[in-house]
Length: 260
Image (cartoon, rainbow, N blue to C red; front, side, top):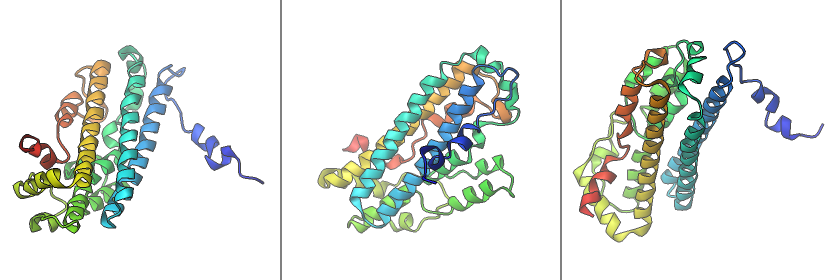
């Protein structure tokens, strides 16, 4: 039998995954499920693309690096635009099925945590969302011990002939990224003499800003939907989300702005 569109995409299985739990069901629960399932698919693609970029950096394949950044930045725009669709759901509509979510929460998205870790966020407190016996717990724990995108980038700079402090090249990957004045001196030099590497720095800034924009839109969407209520699953809701909005992924690239 020839391969069909439906079979290739496994559409029957995919379209059977939306199962509202509310009575009726409530009109907006289907939208809520679809949007979040689509988010998870995009997170899966982001993970795929971040792996691609890190591999390209390790192999000094500049064209693939820029290609990967272009795709990731396009995906981030889609993530932001999906917030517009969620905001068509009123607080009353959401509250009509919110109790059906029980203890489930977006904080439990293992894939988004993977994205954060691959981008350099190192916070083992997030592992508390998963049981030690869970596959997700091991995946996230192991990922925190591996180089993040920023680590791959500064090693790429080193291969390109630029001085990078040894303590950064051989750092403990499980630790958070902190600003480094020596590296900032190198980055300033790059901005003045290597256009291609400067553009790569700017794509990292675009990525950082794009994720912050998505976080901001997510915060405002949650605020207009549930106000200051506690989040599902016992999370602090708005307070946690607000605290995460303006945390830069690549602090060195932001700190050099006033010295360029």
